[in-house]
Image (cartoon, rainbow, N blue to C red):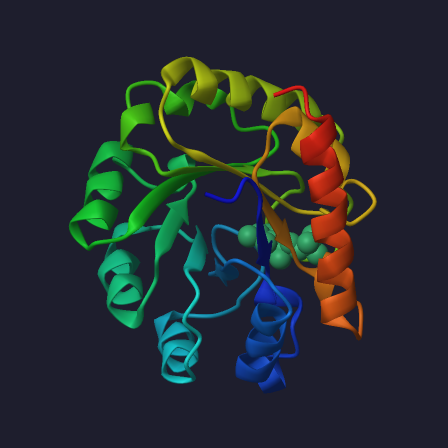
Length: 228
Ligand code: DX5
Ligand code: ZN
């Protein structure tokens, strides 16, 4: 299994050519597509629903699609996203009434389940549900917009979660989302993250092949110098 996973966030793609842009970053070597769902309620922005995800699947986007729900309530959208072709569904614990029930709902619909933590959301939400998680997503910006600066307080949080995962012996992805760039990805990886969401960090470049190649090279170097 690969150690690191690159997940371009299509929030920063050209929405008039979403399918083409998604194909381009996949052809350039990405592992997943990160799909940000915002409802103008949980976060002050509005993006994409299940119909758009289904269109991407119909357009032959075949890599795993990582749905990041920034919505409240959560549960009624889960069957729709699962049916549309989601692979992972991640939600924010404070956005649902019953965290455990929502996790089960995701699994019952055949998807992998994740919890997402805002910069100030405490990790105690992991208590009692860790063994039900496939992914822990740490937000390194406040959710709602692309192209914000990475909050340095995230470094310690990544280390804390890496320890929790390693101590548990469970196979859980540690995903970091917000302000991840070629310039800081090595440090983020060193702290223990293994899934890197990158919006502007990929889509701001005109040559996706080149930037993804550089990211891989940096991660490979991190891997060979890693303390883990
Ligand atoms: C922000 C979203 C992110 C966003 C990241 O709420 O969850 O996935 O697209 O964009 P960048 O990488 O530009 O910070
Ligand atoms: Zn996201």
